[in-house]
Length: 121
Length: 169
Image (cartoon, rainbow over all chains, first blue to last red; front, side, top):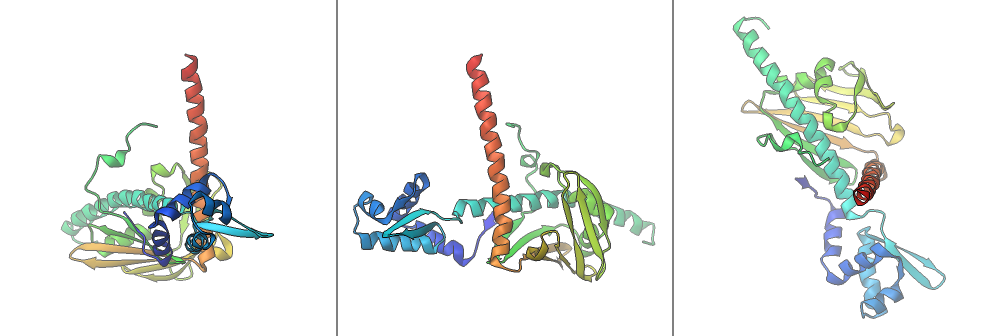
């Protein structure tokens, strides 16, 4: 029920639409890795892997840090599921409040009807 | 745990949707089967708000609820767990619009705007939470995500304990 329409999400979905990038995320989910490691693991050129990591980084799914000559990649601070999870939690809170509010509203409606019959507010 | 949620049994409720409108704004939308004046009343009388603001599923209790619903008026909700929500009303237009600040978070607090739009005896309620920056909204989310994480961690621990006791028996 979460309608999630922002550019961040578009970037996330675009990033996740590629099987290699999903594989990279899964890999980084268990341990950090350098671009070289990832390129070797996925049988790709360094340039190709750099592009993939770039897309993931842009979407906030991965962060990279260059130490010396090695660029290390890890899971980004804004993992999609985390963000979705808190928005869904927020929705659930409001849905629960509104379900209670329905009861109050129904009661006020009944009261208004009765008062209306008696004339005067 | 394992018990069915009460909400699963009553399926005819109106739907609540949440939309991330921008990097710093969240929108909540819900329709109520009543005219705007009634829904507005339920949002502006403390004795009525008390009855729905803290649903049981939140696991919290409201100790006090002071609300002076008029422009410049203040509100303060105090919960049993030492948590407080407070701020001021910036705009109060009967039956159509309420705007307030959320000041417990300091400078990163959001401004909440609730609008009531009546159509054919029903009211479409739209609530916007506008944060001063993307970072502020993200921080609010991270806090919530951390809380979720904490719950999962506790659950994990419980499951391990339960597993261990089953293993022993």
